[in-house]
Image 1 (cartoon, each protein chain N blue to C red):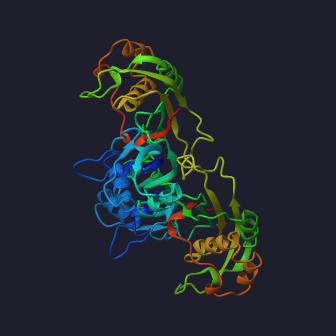
Image 2: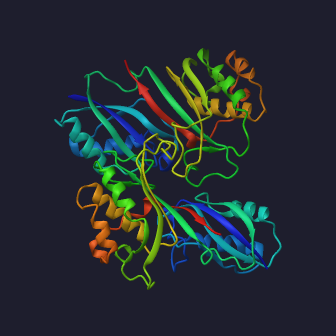
Image 3: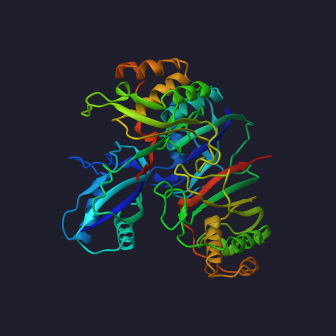
Length: 255
Length: 255
C-alpha cells in the first residue's frame, strides 16, 4: 500500500458537499470514482473536513491508500483528466503509511467573502454573501477578535450535531476590510473577507460566526454579546447561519 | 416617450449572447421581457455591442424608449428584481430622446483574461482562457502595441462578416502582466489581462487578436507578423479565435 496526500480545490456550487450522499454529486464521490481505474477496484478517500453543499475549497486535503503502483505525478494528471473543471487536484504527495487527512489535521483556515455593494456583482453571487447595507467594520473586527482563544463554541454549533465536546481553540479571527492584494473579482469589485483559523470547527460553526458578526456590523447586536455567547449561550442566542456559498476552506495544516 | 440608458453587467456563461436568437436565452431577450410589465407591451432594447455566447460584460450599454412613466430608480430596482442573478442592471439614467446605445457609441474597451498556471483554477474556468504554458509577455506586449493606430483589421475579422469596411482605430492595446490591483480571483490566483480600446470592433476581432498574441507568446509566431496582418493579411494568416469565456466588454464610452 502507498498512501497519498491530495490537495484539492473546488467550486462547491453544483455539489452536495464533500461527503458522499445518497443522492447528488459529492467531491468525495467524484474522487473515489476517478481513482477506480487506477486501483482496479473501490477506493476510500478521507477528507480533512466535510464541507457543506455550496461551500468551496482552495486547499481541502484528503488521504488515500492505494495498492496499485502509480507515481504522485501520474495520479495528479490522471485525476485532473477525468474530474470536472469545478474540481482540481492541485497537489499529490507521497505520505507516511498511517497518514489520515482528518485525524492528523492540526489546524484549518477558512475564509468567508461578503459583498456590500448595493447591487450584487453577477460574478460573485456564487462566492460571496451579498449584504446590501453598510457594515460597521470596526465593530465586526472587535467581535471577531473576541473569538480568539480556547472557548466553548456550543452557541455556534448547528443543532443536532453529534459531537459532545464543543471546546475549540481559535488562533486567528480577523475582518479584512481592504482586500487589495487579497482578492478582487474578475469584475474588479472589492469584497470584504473574514478569516478564521483554529484547531477544529463544529458543524456550521464558521457560518454561525459570520451570521453573528454581520448582525454586529448591522448594529443589531453588541460586540459584547460574543463574550456572553462563549460563556454559555445557546445556538438560538447567536446570529443566523450565513449562507454556504461565501465560505472557502482555504488550508489544512499538519505537523 | 422617455429614453433611458442602461448599464448592464452579466456573466455570459449560460446565455446565447447579447442578441435575441431563435433558441436559447439572450441578455437582450431577458431585458425586453423584464420591461414588458413596466410598459404593458413589447419593448425594444438596443445594445451597444453584440457580445457572443459565453462572453461577459461589466459595462454593456443599452438604450430603451418607454411610453410609460417610470423613474430611473424604479426601473433599476424593478429590473433587478426579476432578472436572474447572472445579469444585473448596474445603472439607469435618463437620456436624450434620440440616444441610441449602438449608433452613439464612441469607443469600447474590452478585457481578456488568461490563466497560465499549470493547473486551471476551478474558479476561473468560466472567466479566463487556460493556456498551460509559459508565455513570453514582452513579445506579447510588443505585438499588442503594434495594433495601436488606424488599420485595416480584415485579417482579424471572422469569415462571413457582413460589414464592408474593416478600418478601425485602436487607441490602447496592452498586456497587463502584473494584475495586482486589477484582479486576482476569489481563490487568490493571479491572472494575465489583455486590454484593448477602440472606436469599433469587427465580429470576433478581439478574440482573433488574443489568439494571435498567444501564438506570439508561445513563440509560434513573430511580433513582426502583426504588421504584415495589418498590411493586408487574410483571416487564415492570423491566429485562431480565442475562446469566448475569457472576454469581457468592460466599458462603452459616449460623447
